[in-house]
Length: 604
Image (cartoon, rainbow, N blue to C red; front, top):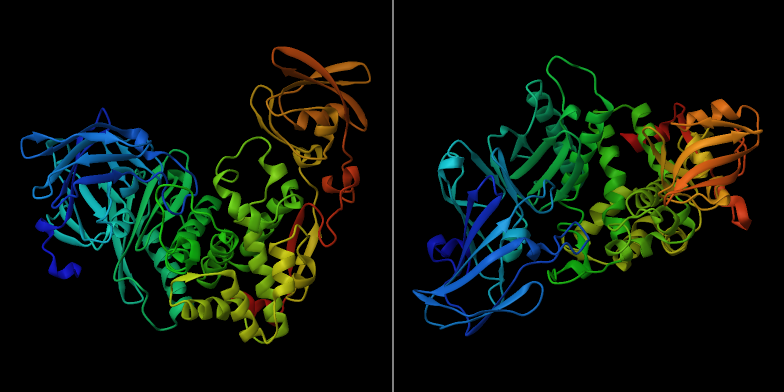
């Protein structure tokens, strides 16, 4: 039945969400199923699309109760996230339950005295058999939330000026793809591509410059819409940005006509300040990234995601394309929107390149394998992650760079054209790797099978130096930081806490391990206390041998350490122990540009 013909009050599935206890952080949900099945199955998703980890949202549900009229209905739990109600089929089923909301991220649900937020995957039980039917969501006002407002991408049916009231969704997928923000947030709006866009910000400091954020976001949105549609219209009738500003945080999650973002409040633009801080540039890149996802992954998406299975992992080898190519375009569109200059863009590109080069796991796992293993590796990182896997975000962005620069050098087409052609070929819907190969063949005039096999399905190095040079950008070796030369990652407080030991580096050869506390250094019989890594250079001087004193499991260990040379022409860590060194780039690089028509065409 078309949504427009279905009265919201009589929607087959109706949820009433009430922020019941702000201090206990409890939402109360009342689910009404108009015509239940005799053995009605209900379930809560175990993951949220866009964040590839089984998060077990059902662990936050409590006090489930089912009734039909005054009659209690048996509610049998089938497994960790499914229940079955034994019902009469001629009477509505009403299920009530509480949701504990204490995750202040973009993925789950949060509630306190100043703010509420939730995703439907954390809140709304799925009614099996009615997933494709219209759903209604009622957001209830309470005395404690009388001064709050509501923002969501769901179509409103009957709401008050603050946004409390009734919303509708065509089906369960739309319902859970439109998160809800509640509180006393800042709100502003603009138009892009002829479509209204709204920005709400929670937790901002009084110095926040909302008008600058709106102006910059508008440039990003207009640039992205032109990228995909030229002078055409985007595939949505409105768009909502929900930004939660916190003391320290970063992240985002894309949705069909909205995005949930989190940032450090010091990264927001400030009144009276014209400069663009590094933190604000990072925030603009996040906004660009999540907005680009509105096309690339929410609509143009892996064929394996054509229909989400909310009960288990959904595997694909294509996250290098959907996340990686989006990561390539997020900063590039900032440059094309005029929000950063060439120098800043190349610094961001160099940062991404170094992140890949300084990850030993790039020689162990292909970026396609990293995509498939996201559920157990990328989203379950530990001290050994850099040694065993590579980020499909960062390496995927470099694959996109190499593909774009190769296409531009050959002069037949660009990656921009390829993305738009994929959108048309797949009708803004599911796609496969073979679709990409077919489009590349048609537009470039030759197959790209060799490049895809080498860049995506092998662990070989990418031809960055050659391709960048053809566009007026030179790679220059730079002095690696001491941590990189030692082959470790650490935090520094009153001592050096080792978090990761990188494969093949001096730290690993000395026998250091994640979790060690590096306390001191013995040089030629003299012992020195160290509290920062730079103390190593200070006390070692020109020495090449030392003994590192570390604490592990209550014991003090003395580990022989070969101190790394400071010269930039040393062999990179991957070259030790017989491993093949990168053939085209050093392990730490910077990028410099010369005036070049090819560079101007690429970045404009």
